[in-house]
Length: 243
Image (cartoon, rainbow, N blue to C red; front, side, top):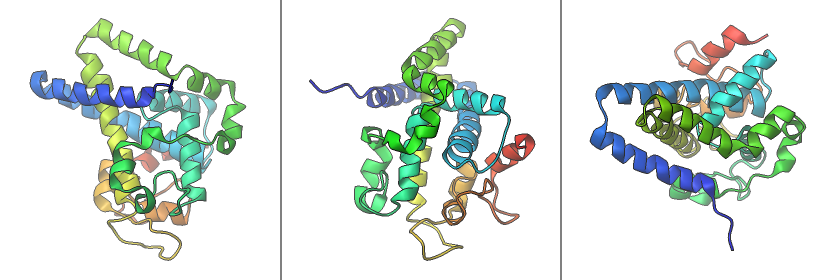
């Protein structure tokens, strides 16, 4: 019997939640949903999962790493260990058949909608697996989501929709767009190494992650926006906390 892919189940719930919000939501529900997406995306996914944990591109207090990891976890894109493992594989095998989310080899649809079926190689994250905190967040990932949903339900049952599931759907597909569009539509300030491109629209929508070619050219730089006009919200946040 095949093991249930709970991330797939979770994303299905997120789609159902979006339909529910379209039918029953008020304007402020959408405002909260975007606000939660903004926090989980800029702090959790970008500043912590990507720039701190995946690349260790800056030093920060332990509280920031732990706080941001919790924020990223409730963002619904996988545990810190799983997310970082897949991202490190992407950089190591970029644009090859072993790249876990290469649109060139996997196709747009799979990269955008089916990335949850990727099995991360834990050999990529032995550093995080030695951390009791990250191991706990990985092993109890769904329990943490359940506790967060229960807390929201106690406040407002519909909050599970607009403050949890819908923002998680936004963040999931924002990541998919970076993996897809960030390697197909845009320009290269640093040509020649791979297909990564800079895309200003994604730079705005995904908190600086759209400056993808800059990042691939300088993966250890926490600043993805390298020019004054390249808006990079996550970098602005990092500047406030980095040591």
